Length: 353
Image 1: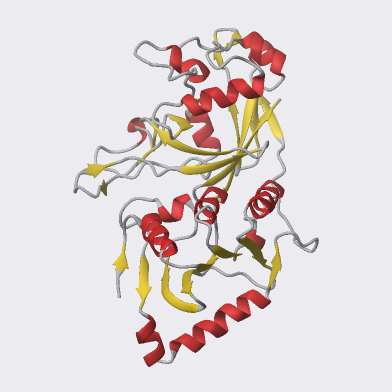
Image 2 (image 1 turned 90 degrees about the horizontal axis):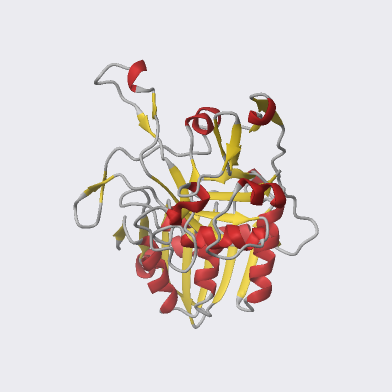
């Protein structure tokens, strides 16, 4: 029996590579992780256990249906009769169970690629399961989950969506929108300087124009995570881990990557970064009081934001190195990103007017 607290995605991939059939029951998921396993070419049955707890949106349903269409070896099911929070990975060879992993890790970036000790998976030795008569119990459990599920293309599947109402702040040309929904943040693509809205030429959308950036074939970009966004949407923006050990034993405070599904079906691995505001702020706490450190920005997890920069410009119909101006945003008719928290590590995003 093995216990794993780090490198969980690779543990799952290694087991999958040595099997010819895989069944996964997971409370939550992200489409990029499911696709990564499906690309191995092994028969894969995936059961989405917490779909009916607000985790299955119209956008995610469409994406999962697309994945199944594009991978003949993949079958996705939604548990519909009750909520299943189980995380169970079953690997078979020639019809026989070869190995089983159970634990806390969802089939998602957040579950399988979070920092050391954040999640756990344990091997269930087949011989021990047989000797202790647990294998039959596991078979019965999996059969019950399967019989309580609907195929992803079923017309009977129910989805959840977040509605967004806004309020205005500021006056005249300084007026801007704030989402009233605690799970949906409106991230401005502009900033207000003096009496007007502007797009800075060397930060934010044009980060790649800052001195020292390579542009990597496209203009690097990030979305600013402001104090106002954090104060209005503390659920959406995670605070920074205060202490975490890397595999080499060093202390880090880095964020885990997240999955963002855009409204056009694009799946992007993104990451919060930088040192933003503290809550409570220094002026509102004693020197030794605990506090939360929030990120300064959100960008693509490609080591510089080039993927995000190229994506934004493609959506706007601009060249990959174009320096975006306020005039460009006005022509695009979308000045915000609607950024929605669905589950830990999984978000959905769309451009909004």
